[in-house]
Amino acid sequence: MSTTYLVTGVAPLGGEQVDLLLQDGVIAQVAPAGTLTAPDDVTDVVTIDAAGLVALPGLVDLHTHLREPGREDAETIASGTRAAAVGGFTAVHAMANTTPVADTAGVVEQVWRLGRDAGWVDVHPVGAVSVGLAGEQLAELGAMADSAAQVRVFSDDGKCVHDPILMRRALEYVKAFDGVVAQHAQEPRLTEGAQMNEGVVSAEIGLAGWPAVAEEAIIARDVLLAEHVGSRLHVCHLSTAGSVEIVRWAKGRGIDVTAEVTPHHLILTDELARDYDPTFKVNPPLRTAADVEAVRAGLADGTIDIVATDHAPHTREDKDCEWAAAAFGMTGLETALSVVQQTMVDTGRMSWADVARVMSSAPARIGRVDVGPQAQGRPIAEGEPANLVLVDPAATRVVDGAQQATASGNTPFRGRELPGRVVATFLRGRATVLDGATVETAAEVTA
Ligand SMILES: [Zn+2]
Image (cartoon, rainbow, N blue to C red; front, side, top):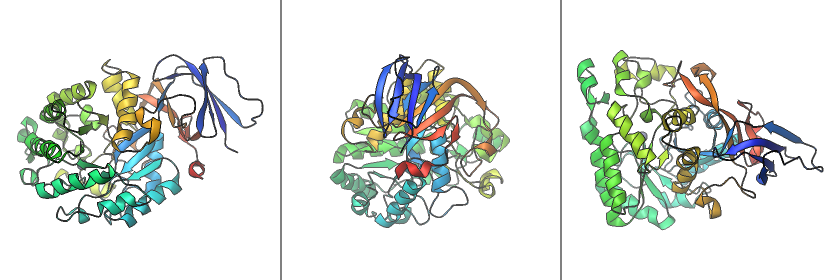
């Protein structure tokens, strides 16, 4: 028998307080606060006093690197999805740049199965666009779409699909199964040897610069390609003010484009490179304060559709070295919601309903995770699947890299105080996180 949860006095999307009964995998009852009691015929009931907590639909990350298969020393599907649950997620999209690359039905099914067996969150594998991420030959997109993993998002992330012919063919191909191409926009010739954002700081400290135009030129090309072939484009980790302008223009023209921003690009700037600490080395690079303001404004006005973590765990060997030799990337699953709260909610630029949109319903819709009525908004309502996160927005915490669930310690927020705390995460009515700690029986979630 599964545990039944009575959640009292919680505020869905930060609105009116209600009581929720989570039973048999669904939200069985929603009633005004103080009116629900546990049903008499149920013995295994856990009551959660959720006064002061906000309930959000389970978060969906469209951009996670789980590193398995191939780099289990940095992260495994088990450790990465556990970190996701701690961060309030109930679904993640696992990027294809593993070893071997997820460019066949066999590899995406392996990732999907390992995710199901771990049981912390739903794992949706992303399929590579090109064989081996080499950017030359189209991968077996149709076979991956038809596989048990039902891939709908295709990306060579980590690398840009820079050949316009290949990009065009991928955009045309995914239309057959309502897929989307998620582009890592980085013009390779303009970024050869690039180490950080090209600008005042790179000039002063002598690291090779990565110009904004290297990102913007690819986005401009790809929105025009998407328009030309009538397909769906998603822009990964948009990071510059100019990129926001291009996406805004494309949407105004009716082009079917969506875009994501990472938590770190919402809060950190290239000033952090001054100490040559490779924790802050990331692709795309941290940009300027003006870019940070532009991506916040773009997220607030809907030009940028979603927040996606680009959670990129790396071992100490790959990160604790000199800047030029260090790997690009930082972890993000366990801090994403706090960063969005700090930059967008606590500043009054977004409501909790907006957070639910940019971190749950919109990424679910882009990734075609939900079918049926849930695709219209993942509501917290009777009869809906009990995929929920309970957040305490009044709590604060100091991030300790060593105490995170991810197997890698490369968080850019180590030692920083962040607002908000995930109190509980429910996946189809079962707690994966309770009282802020993971529940060891997560594998039962999918049993
Ligand atoms: Zn990327």
